Length: 157
Image (cartoon, rainbow, N blue to C red):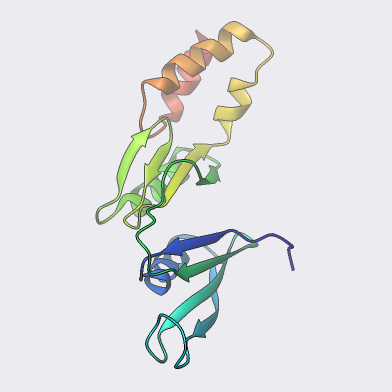
């Protein structure tokens, strides 16, 4: 068990969001569900918290019943092996009211920020050839969803 688990605070759709995330990522699984008793802000039997796991990382989804929206100060970053994987996760995460933001960032239908990043991008941005890294950065800054071919083209100069 990991010592630190991110807790995502939803207004009232924690279980719905978990079901959505678990449907997207292979091997992801929904864990225990904490339901309210007669005490608390939820009606009896209402979902308070849902534990879930994605790629071996544990998370919690909490129904906070507050109007504290998610923002870009915190995001979940998904490393992708290639363009096909970028396209797969990007398309699923923005489905039904999600939207692309910039430079690999998107916001899903629940307002959670994600980065869908091909593994080549950070490697090229850290390239010892500073001119190559700068070309890649310039290309990336013009994108919303990352286009691997254009990143590789920028790297070649």
